[in-house]
Length: 248
Image 1 (tube, helix red, strand yellow):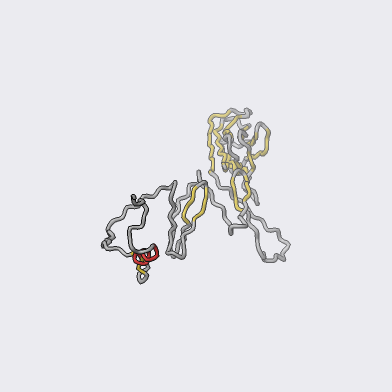
Image 2 (cartoon, rainbow, N blue to C red):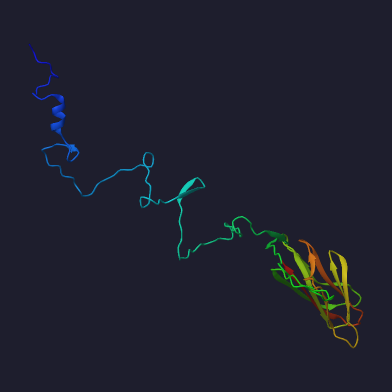
């Protein structure tokens, strides 16, 4: 009679076989072969689709933050400095404590920080206090001179036109000549000031708009400022004028 393929060929029963195969003192299976583990280089293949690595000391692990669709490690700088390059054309900085941010106001095309005076000093005097706002801009100086101006002829000396895209402040206009004369200042064809020179006085005079708390007469882009002269002396005269404006 043939022996079944799964028949027990040992004289030991199944319980005895397990006891002989398992070493309770080492809690391992008994083996006769010596097993050696290679402690050299071990190659591990990781992929970002299937695997992840947690960095840390086993207890404290690094954290990360998601921003702009990217996950980045959080970095803490200790007793060190970090150089940051900021470009005024492409970058911006918000100033504050993380919750309350500093506000700003736009004036004449310039953005300035809003300032709140805390615990101001009490002022008991009745004398008004004035201040002058000095805009951050460039001074435009337009000068011209004309010769042999005939008597009784109103003649243009200097013309200044405010460039497009900017705001200008007319600060000062200077006049001079070889004869006594009437000088008239025009804004877009309308007289806005008049100066005279006379016998026994200086042949130079000025229209000054940069006074008190003002930085000048505000002009709009495209405005035209002109100086004109008229004299009544029998001999021809030479005249000049300079128009000074702050362009912002």
